[in-house]
Image (cartoon, rainbow, N blue to C red; front, side):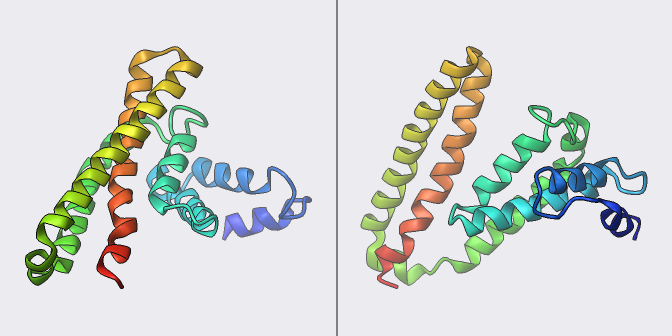
Length: 174
C-alpha cells in the first residue's frame, strides 16, 4: 500500500524516463521487502517485455539478472543469489519432470535417428556459434578473459537450450 501511495506522489507521468526504474529501486530498498521478494517485479516486467519483442523469455531472465545483479545496478548481491541454490535445484527438477512427461516413445521409434541427429547438431552448433561469438565480443570490449569465457559459456548454453525447441514443431509437422 505504501508503494501505491508513493507512486501517486510522483509528479512525473508514468511514461517519462526513469519512472519505472525508480519504482523497481523502491521495491529493492523497501524495509519490508527483501531482495528475494523484490526481484520478482523486474523479472516479471522483463519477461513480459521480451515476450512482446518475440525474444525467448529465458534471454529476458538472463538480461534482467545481469542488470539487477552485481554487474550493473547491484540490487541483488551474491549472497542473495547463493541463498537461492535450493530453489534453483527445485526449479530444474520441475523443468526436467515436465519435459519427461511430454516425451513420447512412439515419436522416438518413428523418427529416432533423424530426431537425435537434428537435435544434437542444432544444440551443439548453436552452443559453439553463440558461445564463441559472445566470448570474442565480450573479450574485445572488456579485455577480461575469465569474464568473457563465462559470458560465452552462459549465452552459448542458453542458445543451445532454445535452438532445438524452436524447430520441434517444424520437424514434427505440427
